[in-house]
Image 1 (cartoon, rainbow, N blue to C red):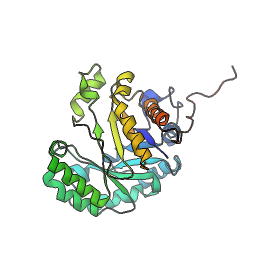
Image 2 (cartoon, rainbow, N blue to C red):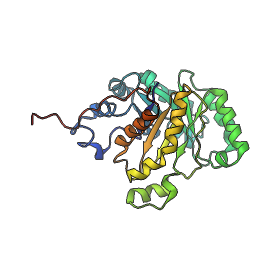
Image 3 (cartoon, helix red, strand yellow):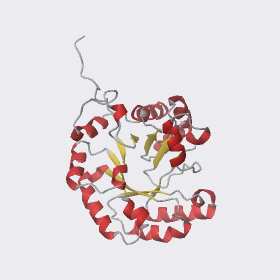
Length: 283
C-alpha cells in the first residue's frame, strides 16, 4: 500500500539550506528532493522537451518507484490542440524513455478553451499514445464540471482508454482574498473550478493548491485525506501534489499530508527519512 506525494518542482530557492543541502550541483538536487517526496510534477517539459541525456540524469537520481507526472509540451496540447503533432510527440517520448517506470503518467493539460466539442480530438490523441504509459488528463473548461452530460461524456471517453481525470483543487485557495504578493499573483493565474474527487482508474492523481498560511492549507485538504485513505483501502495507488502560491513550505507540507493519511491508514508504507539539510556536527 503506497501513497505518492510531491510538489510542482524539485529545486526551489527557499528550500535550499532549509530542507535540502546547499549548495548542491544541479545533478544532485533531484536526489535530495527524492529523499523527501516520492513523486514530482514534470512542469518543465511543458515549455521545452529535455534532451535524452538530461532525462538520464533524472533517472539516475531516483529509484524505480519514484513517480514523474510528465507534462506534454504546449506545442502539442495548446498550439496544435492535439492535432498534427506527431513529430513533436515522437521526440518527446524518445526523450523521456530513460525514465522507464518512473514516468508514471503522461500528463495532458488542456487549455480552458478546450471544451466538449473537442472531445473527438482528445479521444483520437489518447488512442494513439503508447500503451506502455499511463495517461492523466487535466481539463479546465467549466462545462466538464457544470454540465452533467459533458462530464459523463468525458468520463466515458477517458474510461474507455484507461486514462485518469486529474482534478486541480483550488477551492480552498479561492475561499478568501489573497494576503501576499504570491497569493495575488496566483489569484489571477490559477483556474477557479469546482471540487471533483472521483477516481476513474487504479492510479488517481490530485493537484491541490493551498494558501501560504500553513493552517489554512491543512484545513483545506482535510477532505482529501479521507478521499485518499478510501482509495488506498480500495486498492488504488494515488499520487497527490501539494502546491501553495509561494511553495516555500510545499516540500514539508507534502510529507505532512502523507503522514495525515498514514494516521488514518496505518498500513501505508512510510516515506524515507530525508537527507539532512546540514551535515551532522559533533556538538
